[in-house]
Structures are given as C-alpha cells and as structure tokens.
Image (tube, rainbow, N blue to C red; front, side, top):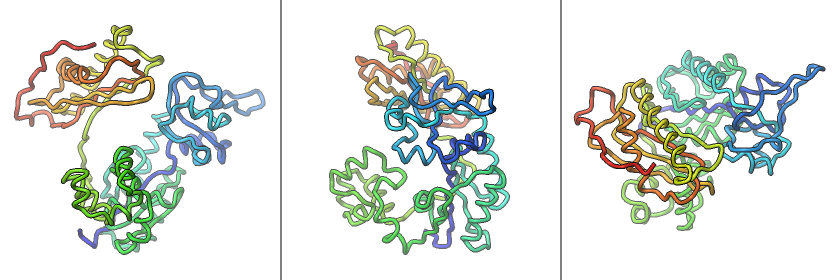
Length: 382
C-alpha cells in the first residue's frame, strides 16, 4: 500500500434527521424519528406552535429511515419497524421523510467539499470518500476546513475519518460522532482498531459476525490474531484472505471518482401481508410493476443487466434473496420478469409476504454486451 496516501471518509451526522431539524429547530435535543408511511406533516396551532405526531400514535407498516442521536440513545435506529420502536420510545416525535430536501442538501455538501478537494468518490446520499494525497496542507487543518465548508453550505455537521486507506477512514469517521475528526495511521491499528468489534469492519455483516463469534472471534484484534489458514478453511480462499488483510488494516482500494452503479433495484412493502395463493392477482401485478420499473431505470441510465434477483421479506421479518445470471444482458421488462420469476420458484411461498423486491446487477453499458439477450422461457409462479 502507498504509505503516502491520505484518504478521508466524510459521513454526515444523522443526515435526514438533521435536515429536518433545520426546518423544525424547536425539536433540537429531542428524540426525533423520520420514516413511516402516510405520516402527517406537523400541524400549526392557533398560537403559532406546531403539533407533532408521536411515535406511539403510528399504526401500520413502515420502518425508521433515520433517528436523532437522542432517539438512538433510547434504542431506536434506522431500519427498525415503527411499531416496535414505539414500544421503546413512545413519546418520540415522528416526522415524514422528505427525500427532495435530502437530495438537495446532499448536492450542497458534496459541491462544498469539491471546492477544496475535488477527488471524491460518491458513496450515497450522506457519505463520500475523498483523496487528499495531493493537497499540500496539514491533515487536521484540512479536515477542519472541509467541515467548515460543509457547515457553511448546509448548516449541518459531519464527521471525518482520515487514514492511509478507505477501510480505516470508514471506521474512523464513526469513532467520534457527531461532529468529529479522527486521524489514524497504520501504527495505531493495534491500539485504536483492534479493540473494536469485528462488525465495525465494513463488509462484515450479521451472518459473518455470527460465524466469527462461533469461532470465538469477537474483536478485530482477535480476528487479526487468527491464522489465515484457519480463516480460509472456514470462509473460503477469497473471504478468508480478505478477513486477514482487513483485520490488519490493509486496504489498497483507490478512490474511484467516476463510479458506475453496481445494481438497480425496486421494492415494495405492502400495507398488509399478502399470500402467494390467496392474493396471487395482487402480488402478480406488483411483481410485474417492479420488473417494469427496473427495466425503465436500466434504459434511462443506459445499462443492461446480466444478473436478475429477487428479495422477499415474510410476515415474521425473515428475508430471503435469490438471483440468476443470464447468458446475455437484459433491459426489457418482460425478460426481467421471466428471470425474476425463475428466482421466485426457488423460494418458499407458504408464508405471508410483507415485502417484495426485484434487483438488476452485473450491469453493462448499453452497446457493450457481447452476447445477445436470452429469454428465460418458464411459467411464472405468480
């Protein structure tokens, strides 16, 4: 790894919730949750004050999009079901999501960073990697200047991790939230990184964490001390070698300033749980619509897809995914539906379903496919 690299990971602090607090500053310091479906906007009272919905009043489907740090202290985090969250924080304020505003503030903070450090890899609406290697300025001074530019452009705070690589910077940006700066070098890996849980490494998800714990590996340090041949035996050659590298803080990935999308997906959470047989017509209509919308997205962005997948979440919140890789790229809605239908045949359809999704990956720019699209001829289960 190039020891002269200086890579930053910038993560906006509780981004969606922070944007809402700009609009409703009277809610600062309170437990606030953003998300849900058909959540009403705050209602202005005759005295000029506003009436805000409370989490305990919410009924129906829906998950938390984000929450303030005060709500997180009560155990309420993004991705949780709102009904479950209401048991933990019934008095938390509930606001509807405003994605147009979030996208606007996302553009603002990225443009502000680009005026100082233009080598940016966009990682989503609220985070970016920045290559600072060629900027002749002391690291902490540069970080503070970037943070100030973000605040001036948005009124929002962010946290920044800076290290020789993306792996350590991603971990670092989370170590001193909110509004923090964390600067790491390779010599600090044993003291700053190894005591952390293994799941802090981006890429070690819940299933891998569970398997590591089963092997007696809880921290990054314990992972680093595990012989690489044992990791290879348990996780396979590629994953085992990767686990060994990242536990030692090694990551050679460059900052990619013109990244192409890895996948395009659409999904729908239902107002009520649907059954594959009893609600076949309704599910089939939703399924077709999702496939057609994915096809439209592919064509609009100029891609074909070599791999089509589905995602189901059952009424008990258990989720399954299946995918199929095709001989050639597809972007036609009917072909996507046929391929997704093949995936659907490979999952149990005895339980009621609360979410259905369709995903296109293995993307190839239109005009670059070497193999003609091949239709999957099969009768669909829906």
